[in-house]
Length: 188
Image (cartoon, one colour):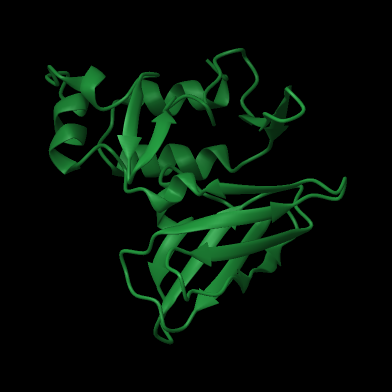
């Protein structure tokens, strides 16, 4: 099982590769194949390799540079294939100053950065919900996520264990309020 901790952007999305180029990592737990399709007329899709059986996929694009615009083509065992913009292709919407202001209780424009309201990221219409993974507040401490199949009009809620103690430690080390760390083990 992969551990994303308090900062999934540290693992997922596009990152400089130690060997040059760009490595793209995606978490797609039930996929049987994942391909990374860089934007551009001549860019060929790159087959991702399953790095962790829990669903961590990785593709190396040796000639790519950051920032990288790309889509994921995800193939599932039932025969469905979906092409999506990877949510981790976009940079986090909160910067260091925002985090400082939130931690001190003085952020006066937090709604502009988080909350379920429509916005455009990289030419893609998005509806962001910062609580969609992690803290569902239903007394179940496992991370929660939703698989949504728009064609079939099906929504499937899923749960997965994660290292709560590690995430709590990272929250504390980041200087965030203790309440944020404490409530994780209670699922509230």
